[in-house]
Length: 171
Image 1 (cartoon, rainbow, N blue to C red):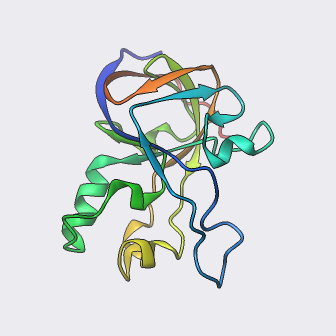
Image 2 (cartoon, helix red, strand yellow):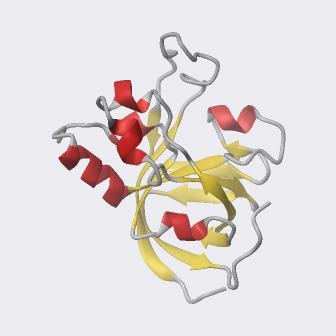
């Protein structure tokens, strides 16, 4: 592992159901997204209380991360200063981490080990949840989908991030 560095977990979210999967061409679902101060991470499953924890083990998106700097730039770009971080429907909004650099790598955040799998690509719904053009603007900046490798808890606030070195080959 590389030496750790400080990041900030700004927001944590879970939602009991999917609002977008299976709704293509129709209206979004109405499952709320809940902001929480701490969440239990379950290895091979997902975050307790979240829609992705119901999938069979091995799912690439057991947890999703989104960069706080990208979120701030998105609000500025589309002139929506009051946009809620929950609109992104990502689990962890983090400040100070290079999320694309974590694809194909193991990393430990707040004592929980993860494996970065792929970009959490934006979908068409971003054009309704944020603003027309948001999906295109978010291409390459949609966040990170990851697997949870060890049980533990994430909390909002300061956390240490350790990145495995060298990079792993993505699955």
